[in-house]
Image: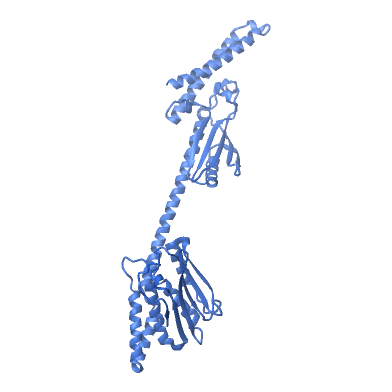
Length: 425
């Protein structure tokens, strides 16, 4: 109440001094200066309109802000708003919030300087003022407000300085009121910014949930893939073993032994999302041993994997996918067969695993659809982000070399398996 009384007295005293000055000038006028009643009536009418306008301003500010203090009653409003976005994004958000204000016009956006200027027409909340243009509360002012917004970049966020004021000099605040329109504009822009930041966070949260769901779906699909053995491979292996039992039981027994080893490593392990290079290598070698019996001298295998790297964490079936690609799209289409190389090395804080062949090459008609390699890349992205990669290049003098690069998070130098350093099969 005290603040509203001070505000009312300030405007009343300012206008009273102006009326006294006008009366003094009137008194000095020749002839009509002796007639006092016109200036007295004009002064009383002016004071009545001023007090009524000031009371209307106080009532509307209380209605908008729910409080009465100097900050709320002022014609010029200042806000400091923190936005958790980088400067460019904060500027775009602020620009959109200002442009959606009612009665907005003449918006000037300067992206380089991160400044926005705009004009806002004042609403006629209660219709035209009494006496229209003869009302003293509109004599010195323009019925428009203006907005100046500046974005200041920060480390992780941006700060917005928002100024809403009448389109008239500061001295006019002693005589004029804005009916709370600048308070309304400042609050509207603040609310719009909060709404847009909240909407952005909701969108990001929804995207994160969707990404998580997609990841879980991908992992579920991969687990199902892991639990499945290729029917054609199983059928061909059993058919070959059955045929060998008639003429070469020893080789048939050897093939079934490798098949058992392959199937043992292909069964899913509960609670274990990751395998190791050693375990995946045993699976791949069991697979290659079966194919060696079927393909005979057409297939040669060379493995160069240090024992210290056998403990390197590796997603299940990833090495197997590269080995199967080398066989199906590299060596099987080639009449004379060829060689598959499996090699692993440590490079600084990463481990590289290469599967190469000297088959028909990457540009042949038998190079496949690339679905297997695409799945490998997607799994690497989901598990390691940008820290892992798969590169596929042409091998010299023929064939393809596929290289996995994985972060050495487990410190593979402290190997947990006592496997042989080098195998030559």
